[in-house]
Amino acid sequence: MFTRGATRNGDVVFQRLLAGAAALVLLIIGAMAIALTVAAWPAIEKFGLRFIVTSSWNPVSGRFGALPFVYGTLVSSAIALFLAVPLGLSVAVFLAELAPGWLRVPVGFLVELLAAIPSVVYGLWGIFVLIPWVRVSVTPPLQAALGFLPFFQGPPLGLGMLTAGLILAIMVVPFIVAVSTEVMRAVPQAQREAALSLGATQWETTRTAVMPYARSGIMGAIFLALARALGETMAVTMVIGNVPQIKASLLAPAYTISAVIANEFAEATENLYLAALMLIGLVLFVVTLAVNIGARLLVSRVAGGPALMRE
Image (cartoon, rainbow, N blue to C red; front, side, top):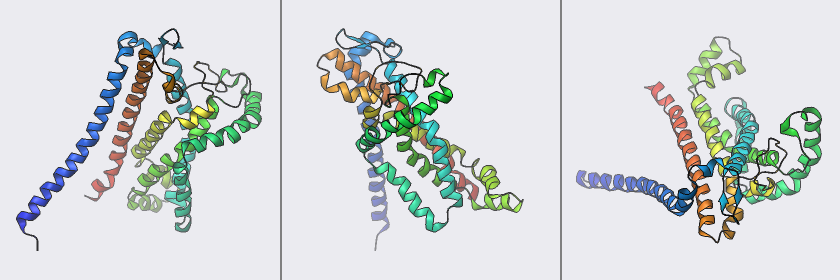
C-alpha cells in the first residue's frame, strides 16, 4: 500500500519532471532564436530592414535582399491554401458527418498517409509527373481562357510558382483534414439533434450547427497547414525553378526562403554571405513560429468548447 507521504512526494516529483520537460521545449526554441540572431548579426547590422524590402541577391558583390524569396514563399503558400482548403474541408466534413464507420477508418488512414510520404519523394513525383502534366495539360487551357490576365502569361515551362503551389496543396491537405475532422467530432451531438428536430437537412445541420461551432478549430487547421507550406523545402526546391525574381505570372519560375537556404548554404564561404542566409532563416523561423502559435490558440478555443457545454 502507498502511504500518503509517499504519494505526495511522487506527485511533486512527477509535476517537476513535467514542468522541466515543458521548460526544456521553451529553452530549445529560445536557444534556436538566439543562435540564429547571433549568426545573422553581421547582416542585420549592415542591411537592417532593407534586407526584407530589396530584391538584389548577389553574393559576388555582397548585396543581399530577401524580397524575391519572401514573395515566392508567400505566393506559393497562398496557392497551396487556395487549393487545399476547399478539398481538405470537404473531406473533413465527409469523414466527420457523412461517412459510415466501415469507410471512415480506411479513408482517414489513406489521407493521413499523405503526410507520411517523404518530401523528396513528392519532389521526384513532381519532376517526372506534375511538371509535364502542368506544361501540357494545365497551362494551355489556362492561357486560352485566362491568358489576358498577367497571372497566366509567359511560356509553358511546367516548373514555376503554380507547380510549387500544387505540390504544396497535396502535402498540406492531411493537416487540414485531420484537425478539422477532430474539431467537428468535438461538436456536441445535441446541437445536431436540435437542428434536425427543427427540420434541417443534413447539409443545413452541418452548415448551421457544426461549422460555426468548429470555426476556430478549422481556422487553426488552416494556419497549421500554412506553417507547413511556409517551411517546406525539398519538394518545392525541385519544382519551383529557383530563380530569384518577382513576377506576376504564376507560370514563371521563382524562389522560396527554404529553397535558397538549402541550395546555397554549402556555398556560403564568406561571413556576410553566411550571415545573410542565417538572417533569412531567422525571418522564416519567426513567421512560422507566429503562425503556429496562432493556430494552437485557435484550436484550443474549440477544444474547450464541449467541456464548457457539459458544465
